[in-house]
Amino acid sequence: MALDEFTFLRWVRRRARPGRRVALGIGDDCAVIRPGRGAGPLFITTDMIVGEVDFDPATASARAIGHKAMAVNLSDAAAMGLAPGFAVCSLALPRGTRTAFARALQRGLTETAAAYGVEVVGGDLSATPGPLMVNVALFGFAGRLRPVTRAGARPGDVLLATGAFGGSILGRHLAVRPRVREAVALNRAVRPHAMIDVSDGLAADLGHILEASGVGAVLRAADVPIHRDAARAARADGRSPLDHAQTDGEDIELRVAVPPRAVARALATPLGGTPLRAIGEFTRRPGLRLQDAAGKVRRLRPGGYRHRF
Amino acid sequence: MALDEFTFLRWVRRRARPGRRVALGIGDDCAVIRPGRGAGPLFITTDMIVGEVDFDPATASARAIGHKAMAVNLSDAAAMGLAPGFAVCSLALPRGTRTAFARALQRGLTETAAAYGVEVVGGDLSATPGPLMVNVALFGFAGRLRPVTRAGARPGDVLLATGAFGGSILGRHLAVRPRVREAVALNRAVRPHAMIDVSDGLAADLGHILEASGVGAVLRAADVPIHRDAARAARADGRSPLDHAQTDGEDIELRVAVPPRAVARALATPLGGTPLRAIGEFTRRPGLRLQDAAGKVRRLRPGGYRHRF
Image 1: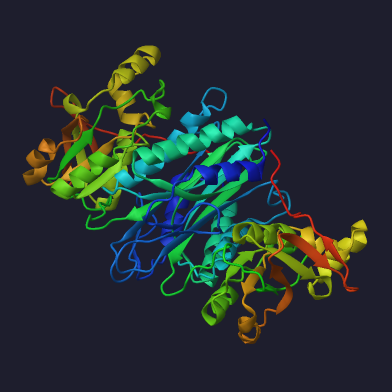
Image 2 (image 1 turned 90 degrees about the horizontal axis):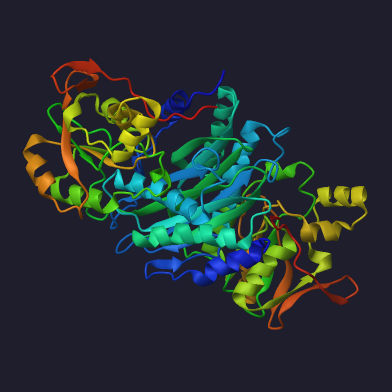
């Protein structure tokens, strides 16, 4: 049987038997471990990027690849409302890699890490007959912050979104800026019920919150922020900008579920200029729906990126 | 300039500026982090294995690959005298991977982890146009155990070794058994001055301890335990069994520096049947030397495995 990403991951999750020190195991953006008395919970996430899958080795600079490998992991920590402190990085470098390239890659990793207060404390280096690959494992201590999972959204919660969606393939996908500070600020200010980052596209990632929380959601089309690149992509391929905003992967914004009473406080939280707005709400009725400007509601399929094997 | 593994890693290490919470940064078998008040130190290591480099995708079973990916990481924790508790695993699977293969790979990872008291708490899954690749990041809390680095060996210390060396290419390299329990038992019993695992070959890995500790060492040829596979490999290629024992990679035994007064206690420590013996000693004079059965001493070059780019 050919491998299906989500089916396989569900199988992995079903087999897991989290021990008593595991506060959060397989299936969310980070795992959370109780270290025992004293220290706050430890959280960890890992994400790899692969040449020809996540970037084009022919055009991406070594520094941009290093940046992206760190940024996608930072975004996974952001999705929990947490700021990581440390990383270990594994590099698989193709034969023929030049020293200058390896150094620029390492610089991309460490500079992006440092910009977010993260220190690279170890790693691994291997040759590979395949494309360049970078794996990062990113971890830190939550301290007094509560990790925000995908599972806490409740009917009536308001759906907030940072940034604007769609069209990331037009250059932005290597320069993603993870919303760590914004996520931590929101976690501190309003203790969101659920949070996720949108690296797999608006609809797909919302689907993860809906599945984990056992709720549905309605998006208001008029309120979905469309990135100008989504409009450009739409002109290029004839699909609608909203369609791009719903299904393009690689954008790296936050999706946040907050109770109605906390919305005003969330929208008033200083986020260093990053836009935040309410784009819909969670419902008891399952599934994801889109309400257009005329008030008409239609069902959305969870699109987004899926690895093909 | 073509990439050289050790030169590049030295460059990475030189650039690192470990923060105050980093007890041990880049350059040892694990990184060690002080989590702050209360909990004992956190340690973490990461290691990837790559098809065609670390195993033969045409002959290795999925389960054996999963086992090996976990085992090499367990051995890095063993090299610090520590027992890890948790792992995150990234899989890059070639297109065309079957579900049964992916499941067997995951089973290899989780079963080997469980056999050592480690829980897989998260991971990442990607497609790749290249060979299969598995990255593991393994971590845990040291509790009251002191992490044993590569840097503490002193002149006069005795060099102890578990197991027998050489010839691992003849089948053993996929079935490596990391010496976690043995390492923790030795750490508890004698607080070794330095420790390392020998995944890169006897001579090369000893070189890491010598470099980090600023000492030399003399091996007594008569005492170097030769695996029967080294003798077989020697018959096959005409090199001596001792030569294989010195330079073959992929064996996964411990090398331990203990002060003379602790040798008897170390040798008396119950290690579940794993052999442990004194094979040499550390010296003020730098470099690695081999004393043959007739008492003649010659210089050894640090051989061992090195990635070619």
